[in-house]
Image (cartoon, one colour):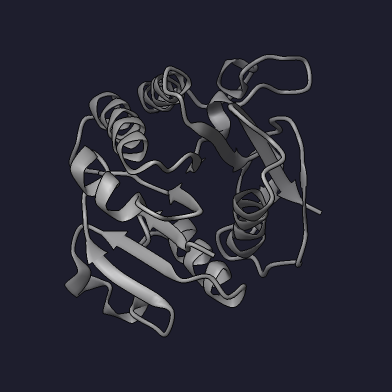
Length: 209
């Protein structure tokens, strides 16, 4: 196995993905902006490095020879519209340069269609105060679609169960504001798609089994 690279490894989804990848025996490169703040990630099987997902050269360096790249990224200091577009562009350019193809990007349920085909953010009663953030995620997804990568945006169907214990399973599902999934179960879906890709160039929702 060529290993797994996780950008945004210091966040909750990123940490869960790192832990699941290590549990499955993968060599993991955990990429964060400030490694000194995430030293606990540097466990056996994990190479902790500094990197920026909007830097195509850094993406190329850490994607080379990897079986898959996972991105669970967010920069609270950046304009979301600029950040997600820049991340998608750098991932596309950097991974192509490195000869890496499989990208799993942690997305947002707000832009996932429900069973009727309506984006969750456009359904009655859905909160609109962060609509600009929703649209930034959608723009990043559209930017990925313009690359030649074998990408998959994976998101909760509704939201993460932030304090919930993993159940050990998950299922795919359209957007549903009431749906929840634990971070550990979400990581199962990420690593399953990294190891045995079944869904390609689409946005897929998952919820608890």
